Each structure stands twice: as structure tokens, then as C-alpha cells.
Length: 320
Image 1 (cartoon, rainbow, N blue to C red):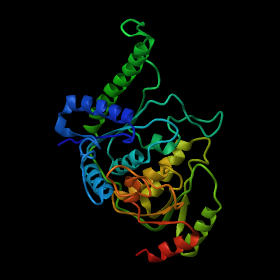
Image 2: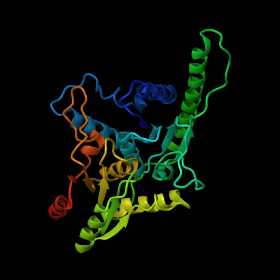
Image 3: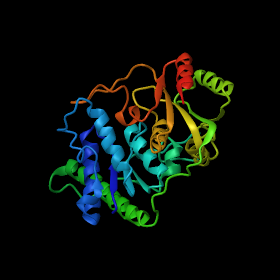
Image 4: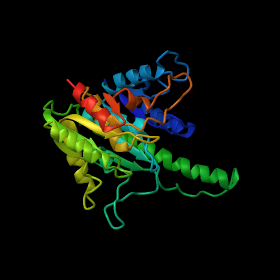
């Protein structure tokens, strides 16, 4: 049976409305029982548990292991880390992922370099299709409510067209691509490093040295250094992510960088090890949940976290 997952940022009403609109459009084509909408279908608003965040993580991952297609909504320069984790999870299973963006900006590593829809080219590499809802619909006049109502209708027309296109493309690709996991071949001495794309940190040189001293081969993310073809470099990074027996990522800041979140999701599929550099701050709090030190989709998929090289050494020494 087909099961489709609509991924979207949960923490603002307008994002939940957009996710619900896409889910309803998809359900009208496939049936209500074939569509899973997080927050709505986990009963998050009324769910009670001593460890609610962990329970929600387990419920979402159980669904992600069964789905046959995904539509994910991403927009703006700061991409939701929970949605990116879910995309990485689906992509690592070979699931078709249709990305919908309402952002009218594009992103590039250089003024004259190739442009990407998203601020991380790894998303461009992983997406089955990218649908942009970045322009207003046709202007039909100010009758029946004035200019603000007309402007609302221009925006809604764009969103509705994007939802229709996303549903059509998902149903086409989901029927062609059967879910397949990546090759089970793991390179036992390969480690993947994903530094922060936002700022250089000499700590990563020390991380690299510690790994080499312990006999690891190391692949450090290359896509943000390749200004000529960052999407092709993203493909090389993804190949390394799926082959490495260890990944070390940077989750510092109020939100995990998109690439680190994608990698966390990809490795969660098979329970692969992920160590995360963490600043020791930025807890997230939500009604009824236990305090989380990270988006729950990231927090509960990680193996361990470290705040210093000494902590990293301890974590490495404790690995089986």
C-alpha cells in the first residue's frame, strides 16, 4: 500500500496550514489513509507522555520507514532542521522526495557562480523534483475585499498551483521508483566530517588529526568549496556519507545546519553512528514536551555529542 509523508515546519501556524493544504490535495487523489501529516496524525496537540519528544520521534521514524513518497516544504535561508532530517531519512531509502519552496531568493557560493534553490546544494542533489512557488498569481482586480484580499488571492493561487504540481509529480515518480536502501557496504575505516557552513573553526583541523591518529580515512564535506559545481560535489559528499561508518557533524547554533540535519536522517535509517559538536546552549521547549537540547528529530538520532576535543576523544574511545 502506498503511504505518503508531508513534511513541513511545525512551529508556526502558516506552515501547518500549508502542510495541511498539500496533504488534503494529496489525499483527494490517493485516499485519506495513504497520507501521513506530522503534528496532525501523531495527535501532538493532545498527546501526553513523560518523554513526549522521544515518543514523537519514534512515531515519525516508524512512519518514515514505511513511506513510498514524500512532499517536503522548505523555504527561506534558515531551513527547518526537522524537515531536513526527514528528507535525509527518505532519500537514504531511495524514496522519491518532491521539494516545494515559497522562497523567491536563490543562493550561490559566488556572485557569478551556479545558483541553487536552497542554501545547501545537497538538497538539490537529493530532490527528485523541486517546485518553486515564488511568484504571485495573476492579479484579478480589487473587487470583493480590496487590495489586501486581492493580494491574498494572488498568493493562494500560487500555493494551490504548487500543491497540484507536487502531487502530480509525486504520484508519477512514486509509481516508478520502488523504495531501495543504499548499499549495505560500509567502509569501516572511513569517517565523514560535516563542519558548519556558516563559519570556519580551527577545531575541525584537530578533529581531522585525532581521526587520522586512530587510523581513520577522512572525507570532509566539499560542496561549499566547489564554486564551479557545488551540486556535483554534494553528490560526492552524499556517497561518502552513506559509505562511512562514522559521521561527525556540527549542530551548534539555534538550528542545526541543513546538511548536518540531512546527514543525521540518512544515518538514522540504519542506526549508523553520528557524533555532534554542540555548544552547550540553545535548548528548545514546547508545551507538554521534555526539554530538548536540539530539535527532537536530530537529538534522538545522534549517537553522542561533544563540546571539546577532549570530549570527542572520549566519545571515539567508547565506540564499539
